[in-house]
Each structure stands twice: as structure tokens, then as C-alpha cells.
Length: 269
Image 1 (tube, rainbow, N blue to C red):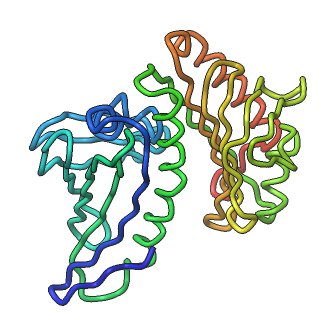
Image 2 (image 1 turned 180 degrees about the horizontal axis):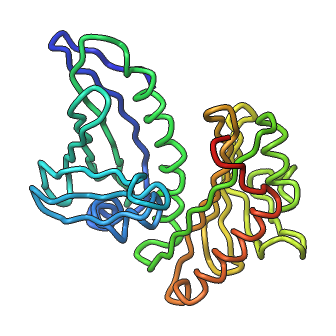
């Protein structure tokens, strides 16, 4: 999304999505730790002005993002601030009720700068929200309010993007996946069966599936060139009261499969 520039030096990018649910239900999904963890990344949230929101993007504290809540107006709006590249970055979330039992969720990142140095990075943030908002929409439509056990895994490849992506999805039986198609992974792959919900364009490889096996779940696969290699995140959101009972086994199975398909790269590669 393009960066909006104001004479004051304030710059901002935004993204939005229309989702099903009442403002209160949508608020729980975007402004509570369990809700955010059900469609984004594992998050802990102290729901008050002056509280913190800590989102974990991977193992270890080094991949945590910590924000301070500066505005808290349930169920319509909250603002959280982080310290990053250009200085203080404010992220504003709003929920707007619409007709027909839906709401618009809008996120705006804003910061002050006199140069364009950080514009591309924040523009890419807003595009990143598109994928997560697709997951949010599915979560609210099919799994709203259910307990969630999120799993975050990562593989890496030194192959070109197209070959790396094919190496991930071909053994899962997803090479020719199309929206609405029912898919089932082969017997030698982790248990996976469900419906294809989103297929990204080839230049941004990605798939979003709504699963009924191994348990009701959403699966998100994508390829992201970074630092001379291609990162291949695998995110699974397991729903329901039985999800916690199987999450560890599901994670172990997927991690072992990924390690065999993509042996960890040597340190310093």
C-alpha cells in the first residue's frame, strides 16, 4: 500500500478487511492475547492503557515485538506504540460495525520522518497484513471464539524461489491447488485434509487451507526470499478443545518432516 505523507512529517500506511461478527466478537479477536494468537502470531496482551502487547514471531525473545498500549477504547479502538527504525511507530486498530452482521477492521501504522528511508519497509507491512487478514476472516467465519493452539515452523532453502516453493508443496499434494478444491496429503506426509481457501499469485507464492484433519484448523504456507535464501514458513492454527491435546504431536511431526525435506543450513550460511 502507498505511504501517505503529510506536511507535518507524519507518514502512514493502512490496511483493512471486512469480517463477520459483532464489534464485541471482533474486538476479542484483535485486542486479546488468545484472540490475536488465533490468527496472527502467539501474543500476550495486558488489556489497558500502559499495558504491553508482546507478539512472538519465532523461538527466543530476540524475535519478540513489544508494544506499549497508549489508547484503549473497547470495542472500537486501541493504539500501541513500538520503538523501531524511524523512532516511535504508532499502530492504531479500529473496529467499525457494518450492516449485515459484519465489521471493518482497520490497522494504521504511523510515524514521523523527514526522509523516505523507511517507506518501503512500512509499505511491505501493509501488504503483509493482507495475508493475516485472510486468516482473520476465516477464523471469525468458521472458528470464532474457539480455543486455539498455534504452531509456527520455518524451513529454509538455497534454491530459487520457485523451486523452493515446489519442494514444499509438491510432497503435500498441493502443486495444482485451486480455490475451493478439496485436498488430502499423501500418506508419507503429515496428516492434512481440507479445502483450499486462498491461492496467491505466482510472484508471491502462498496457500491458505481450512482443514478438518488432523483437527479443525487453518494452515498457511508461503515463500519469502530473504538474505540470499528462501524462507518457507508453515503456520498451523489448531482449533477446539482437543487442539491442545494434539498440538505437540502435530508440531513434532511437521518439524521432523520439514527437517528431512530441508536439512537445516550450516551456521553462518
